[in-house]
Length: 630
Image (tube, rainbow, N blue to C red; front, side, top):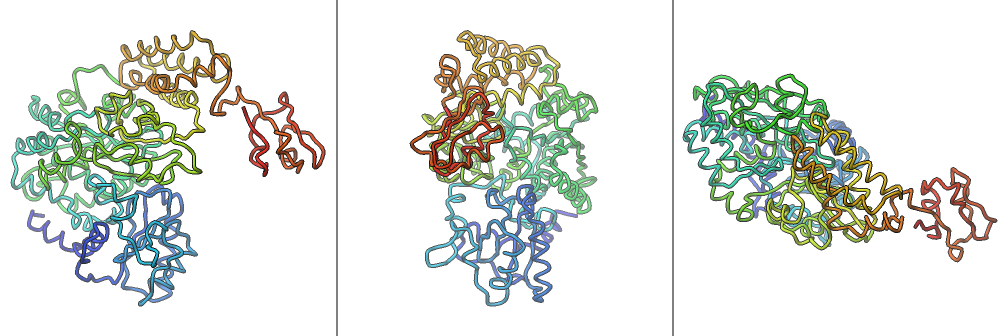
């Protein structure tokens, strides 16, 4: 395939993709009529698949056959972003947004909406997408989307991820053609440097500088690596890009290969991501067949190929040196730095290693120019950032916002706020390596430097929201349990330090904490940060230190008062029945597995705290809010 043939192939699905883009971007006029009267997009990402979206597709196909419908295209896409509403189905060109779809709902939509002359089934539409008069609200006006700017996620939820023609029509491989036919390697590097793109994996290192270092490193054999070992609890940004637009990563890695002089690339992806792995395999096969991977790419004389390497789930393999050790076939353990991967990486050769989101930003920069990208974000944090928004939040899902967007905007305007009228307490960013942002910092700018300044970090993009019922000591313990379990054990500070920190936190949450434990935590944390071999051990104390900085009153309550203010730590809790509220309905007693509740019918009951196992069944079944824990 030549660059000209690539343009012709892009035209194959151009009008189909244009319709979807037009609706998403609220264009005044839709694209010209396509061969299809309508297009029905169903999310095929992990979240919706686990909610049985494949059954939705099967029902669509069955219903279409029953009604003789052959002029509507069914498309299995990647993630739309609003994961809390899955399975999601969207009908174009209207942009009708149907959440929580079931096979029964599909039948209703087909019969009333998809038959010729049909109208959207308003009672099944997402309430945020319908005007009072019943008309459809464009995507750009939906609160969840209107504050976003999708660059890395540009094709997720737009294209059929397993169809290379749709990917090409949506713009994939356009940048590769431009690079191979119009740009020198130095020009590519200059463009990346001018854009201000920094690594999205956590460290925020300038991408252009990294590529320049590898290009300048001596040696004829070099490598390009994609870090898709996304291990942070609650993080699913990289997975969603791979599931929704795998060609964006393949294209960017090929551009990097041309730029630094590499001919082989590796994608290190978690084996726990079966859909991402399958779509990567399909994408690589399709790219090879199209002449976009392998030998003589686009008849330019440049050769580059990509292979997958599956990780076995070790969190430490997200650290670049451990990841490269695993690719080489060794145990995934970190090694000292320097030397850094740009000069001595895989098999001891110069290696460009970036994470999935970083790769997904490369082609838009080439296509739109460095100045365009640099105009987005803040002075030192350019472009956008993808966050996996989870925890105590209405709109759980994937969001991409310009750097510098405030945490308040993400939580309340995009996330829809905290459920059940609860108050925002904190947000955890950066996963086990990050820190907690308290309510007093809700207006912090979400960029690299601002987060570091308040004791947190960007990390890869996990954003866990916590409400007033969250115990911050328990949260710190949760992350320590994770890092202690995931430590590779190679260095003493991490192997032993995480265990000792966890022992102290367990002691505090069990009501056995002592004042000197707070000093021990800080001393041990500083030692670990200074002497651990890799970032896992160096950053493991961060969740504890950040919660101590912002929520020291909770630590003191656990230690001095033997009390958990949030009512979470079982060892510090007792359940009581308030006599003036109890109606003696006996529901609590009948559902208590320990037989700890007694009392006559229609008389106030009581709980024997020596028998109570603190399971919470009594509270769950009490209709009069008569049971408290304190």
